[in-house]
Image 1 (cartoon, rainbow, N blue to C red):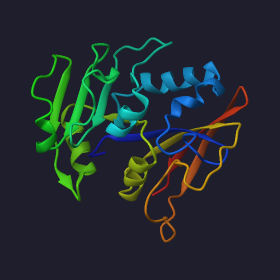
Image 2: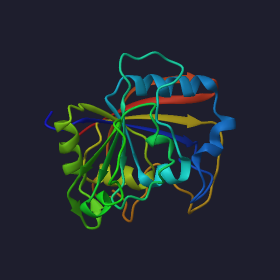
Image 3: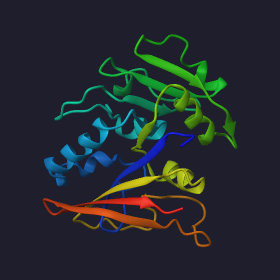
Image 4: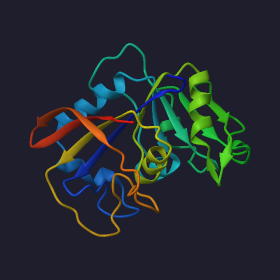
Length: 220
């Protein structure tokens, strides 16, 4: 494979909603999610070279993106796509718990003039006022990162599917309904994939304390 292997992990309600509402942190799911589900997520994290999110996820959720509750031989990189350098300096992803890679533009690089030893800033190409995903994956491959776990929101998921860059999905489905026509979903974008459905093959399913953990492979 010329690029990194991309695994997408998502957590949603039965009706496919990934947060209680637009602009509301998905951490509000926390009280409804069993510890056993969190353990499975950390197992997934422990098996990859990097965990990637967008700057929006950092701004809304302020995740640490570290491996907890399980031992791993090496800590995965925390990879942040931040074209304009929006993430605050006190974000958890910038602490010393693990190494961090910031993917940004020439413009965004100006916000990261001084960085600690555990952090690296990489300038990527841009396309239509967004980071070029193909270039970012190429840059990460050059850094020795072979497999990535995506923990982003519906917008970045849509972009990755649009370019056929997803190899695998691990979907945690929680036993509740959220509703709302404008509530964020697993894959949010301007257009549907009506003329080119993204067909997935179910590889495994597991029940965890009333939740489901489904693993799918993307059939190209």
